[in-house]
Amino acid sequence: MCRSKQTRRLAVSHESDRRAVTPRREQRCSCPRQRGSSRLKLIIFLAVLVAMIYVGVKVIPILVSNMQFQDSIESTARFASVNHQSVDDIRTSVLKEAQNEEIPIAAQDIHVKGDGGRVEIAADYSVTVNLGVYQWTLNFHPYAKNNPLL
Image (cartoon, rainbow, N blue to C red; front, side, top):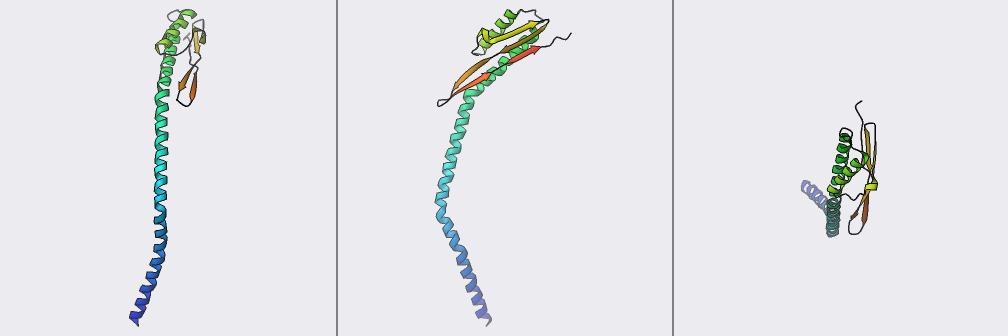
């Protein structure tokens, strides 16, 4: 009798194992479809990554030149009152710095106010970036002023 009970238990356990195996076989059938979707996700991820790198290569140099131009405007404003420069001299100096940074700006886009030792410099310009499928216009408004100590 003991042996027959053990045999029955083994038979029952084998049946439960067979039931547990059948869903795994169904899962194996769906694996090739899942592999394809992971390849598609990889291709989409790589395409987005390449697009971001491309945009970065096009835009980052423009942003860096704007930061350098902003820095030069700030130093010009800081030293303009010490050097006793006129408004036209300041405008000419800022225009020269813009040309050094290859910034497309005209003299009439540079606004300079100078009175009583205070100097304010503002400039407005835009740069169009050609991204192949899209024209992106970046607008910049650098501004600097100095405050006299007295």
